[in-house]
Amino acid sequence: MHPPAVAVHHRGVNVGFLS
Image (tube, rainbow, N blue to C red; front, side, top):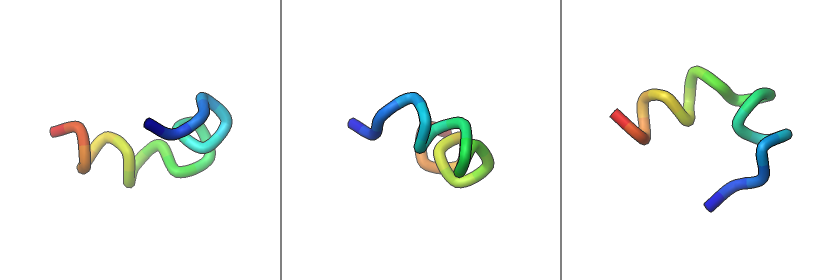
C-alpha cells in the first residue's frame, strides 16, 4: 500500500511486513 519509493527507502521494513 506504500509507494515504490517508500518500499525502496524502507526496503527492509517492507520485506519484513510482506514476509
